[in-house]
Image (tube, rainbow over the protein chains, first blue to last red):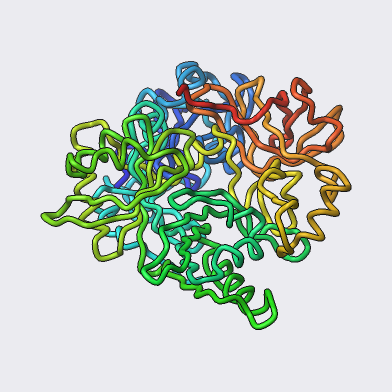
Length: 127
Length: 387
């Protein structure tokens, strides 16, 4: 069963949110999502300086089998993207909660987020 | 639709498979990573459960003449032991299914025996069409028996350059030559040893991956034991259980059509590049002959004015089924299958494209959900194994 990192919060669209200093959050996608997508071969991220809006699409994740929209779990300005996953999208599969992080946002507000416990029980993940 | 499970479903669960619905069957999509499974088949060997495929026996004194009438190919010309790719069409020349027919040795009473293997989702339709054509095809009907053995028969494939040496481990040394001497698109009965017993099984050198490989027909009751014997071999690392995700990416690289994507009732064998499979010159009538002759006369792809082509991605993004193909912003085609090619490292797609834009080297765009990405028309297949 897919692992759900206990220290993170999650959106219904399978993005995770990690609190960093102040308003800064880093964002990625859960192992539940990467398992369902299969091997990821391309990721399209928002640009640094762009504003993303909670609940709206802000990029795409493409696997061998399908393309999925990436939804912003929070509203705010993108401050950094992870160049490593653009070069090697397989990092998202191999380490979704670590080296496979996608981008960081200076969050003004959060969309609806679930605790790890809530997300795991809803989506069949394992804490 | 009711879910069907193959006789190997529990084996797949033991191996941690994730499942997908395919043609009404719950089939393994992958066991670990579909990319790893894909590469395993190209470099070593993959193990597949294909038990969702149909098996329809056509036997009797008229069997060869009947299949010449019911299918688009010249089946009567096949030698015993050979396999042949063919189509079953309707009266309008639409494709009901693509299938492989095996000519088996005549029965004890001297009558011809053929095994017809349709796709999973079409097995019942094909069996029914054959049964119906046996009655309606000529005055008084053909003297044949059509028996749908799909529900009792499992099919296990070992595909890849190491497939032969892997299978030989289950065959007594005295019979190795049956396997090593087996030609591509041929089949033979071979004794296999597994689960403490020996069974004579129909072994075919056929596949859907672009590699050398075999398909083994086995009774449902023996399928799990045979699968377990192969999984035990897989523990040595040269054989990898593989799911339908890799089967799809392998067949796409090999330029092989998939029914439902490239082929359909509305489709046209000539537009799909399957003209050589339609034996218009064979003696006598066959179902769809008049319509197919008219379509050929009118030129390839006459129905839609389109032809199936290969598209090689010049960027990183892949086209997917039903995405529009554009030339200078105008829609000139539609993708039928597409994804990043694991072997070649660039996106590949098959698409029906207006005939005037099908010359290799032509640059076209695929509309990827609002963004366009350039592709170049190339000859199929994308990948061909070194022999």
